[in-house]
Length: 398
Image (cartoon, rainbow, N blue to C red; front, side, top):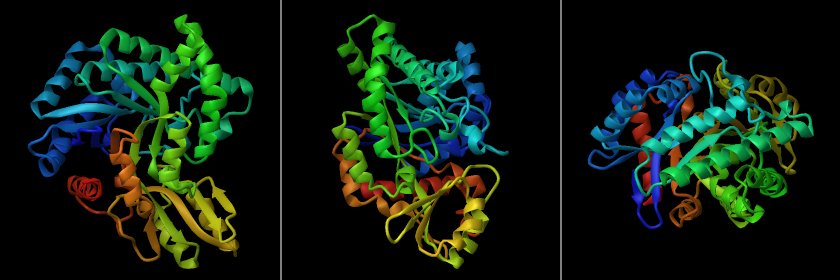
């Protein structure tokens, strides 16, 4: 939905909350769930879509002009406009263990490049005139998988090829689409400083050189193209997990000339490091998603655990641990359960002022863990829960 016109600000929710790898499942979720949310949030307005299209669905849509036309007809019928796609999870994302497989295939592989190109082509065919499109993606890879300089070179070459395709797409269709690498705990890109360094030292140098080679253009023109079409998907849950200030992080990207392609509005679990906390966090240790844990001592020293079960075993042995944060997306309106709260409080009035002032025109609520929330904190009806998250955000944006 359009929150404001100048500077433009669009708000949606990510459809990765709805299970489905096929386009038929996605289509049904839009027809049944999205329209129900729209009826509660913006019944008389055009309503933005933050699609999640898996590789299977992308293949189906790419192969069928009829399916693409049917989708566009559905959008128009219900006053829906897609402007963003979550291109992070390639394969199955619900109803079974995902864990670190969510990062595969990574940007070392042609499979990730080709899938992203498919998403861009689909979005270009659906974007309304005058609105740019965003695609969020894996932040390169899972950090333990990147062990050599050759691994990084492969990622950079494939990202450059994606930029070259987006440049050609803009020239051929008039639709501008940008790709956002989404920093995440334990990934190749994790912190704001790490991400800025990668862009400045590698993407804007070797990456731009590869774009210049592919498009046979000047190096300076290629760098401008990279800055236009490749940036960051700013997930507020992930920023909070690093104990970073989201306002300072947004400004750091801006000062570095790195585009914020999309802001995902999300919250992590947060609690003081006490025995009561470990007991309260135990129900969140579920088998589907990876729930990285970050801890901080009163001295400022930080600690990290790959997944919640390991953290729950080891945290009692840390006598100086002050606070823990868990990569488990909880609804933005979640106010706490016993000793557990959320990082939604890091989304301050100053942060929302940055958004209103034009930090990024694309906003997306993202709480994909709805189906694995423990019963004691589960909000119940999914449509009502999403509508409550919209209300939470809109109250702070307006």
